Length: 318
Image 1 (cartoon, rainbow, N blue to C red):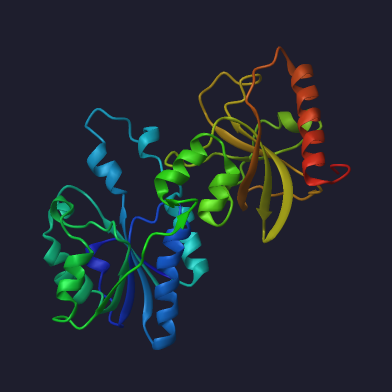
Image 2 (image 1 turned 90 degrees about the vertical axis):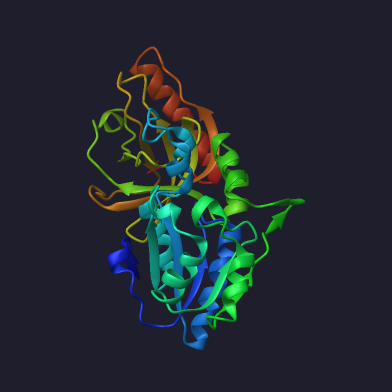
């Protein structure tokens, strides 16, 4: 997959099928859009995703005094996670349009003529009914449709995916994640909510307690569920394992503010340092707690592991 993150790089010579959207979280609605352009590859078109970085909420919602990654502006999927997913899906081009107050002021018609038509050679463009682009967000699907005949492309609107009488949206996914409802998040996403990162060396306190963990420091832009313990699955070097994951600041053994994602992995004996791993969160087990000392913490970890063994229907964690 070729990643294009500047206007200078944006020159695609091949004819394309383009999906436009924020693609935060890549839920079932997004996947319906992606399937349309992936299907178009059978007709000789290249599949291209046109999205924005940073997300519009960051550019327009963040005042000068706001923190860079206020929870309101954190994403369901980091830039790294989004790139990985789209590449694995078979996307040929990912355009991360650099969004700022200047580029956001481009007239909607200019988006169509100078970007989609001239720079991307669009032959099919797909989007949802809530599409907005260009100055003051006035560009919409109707405008794409209006110019389709003149510039010889097809504009195809994909209706939002519904479930339980409500439309699936990034907002619904966020709400599920923020309340720790991993099962609902999985339903909306079509896959588990995950945190990805590189395994780093930690304090190895878990090892001294008899439960060594894989330690990740999530990117600041990543929206995390409530701090606590989760039943999880962990993908390490292409293999999946079951696990118990703690998300939080480890208040019993640390006084700092650093947030970590630490996972005890069942039946894993290898060394994963410096490897990329994916932690899929299955179910919230309990909130993060501060214990009186390491003995109480160790006893709670034992209980967490036993609870996870019962949850997964396995015996023995080694």
